[in-house]
Image (tube, rainbow, N blue to C red):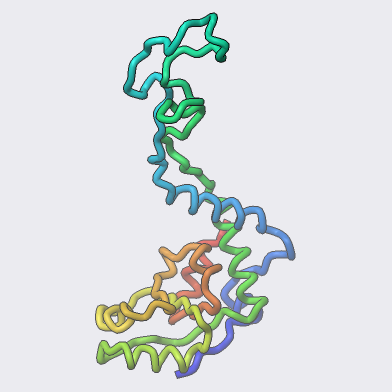
Length: 203
């Protein structure tokens, strides 16, 4: 079993138009930033001086001590006092519109095709469910350190064979995102995955 390069000619046959140089770069940036922001929990929390437990008594007189004027011990300048302008729980979520998402995907696919790191094979299946068999088939397809295998459907036996292999990721063309495509050294499309993923770029 050997994989073939997904060339510009095949891209044209699949009705995918390669983007001009530079077009869509900002869309890729915006989408990756959104992915990372949406993964943030936003649970960081500090107490301000009104939330710190402690006495509100003035620590010493306003005048006559020779020291600076102070109120209570909960002021931000004291150890154990409140935090000035500290983080509070909030959402970091960012939204990206559909047109930008499609443009970003088209940009990444264009880059993969031009770099020669996008391949395709007719089918991929590990019948015995063994990791050794899975790795053997992967080595026939790609020698890259990080491989992304995209297929419309993997059977349960193939998933079981791949679960202990950290450098190979199995995804479907409907769920794969640009972050996973960018992370892989080589992307392998199985069966009709090319048509499905290219259909996602249609604006």
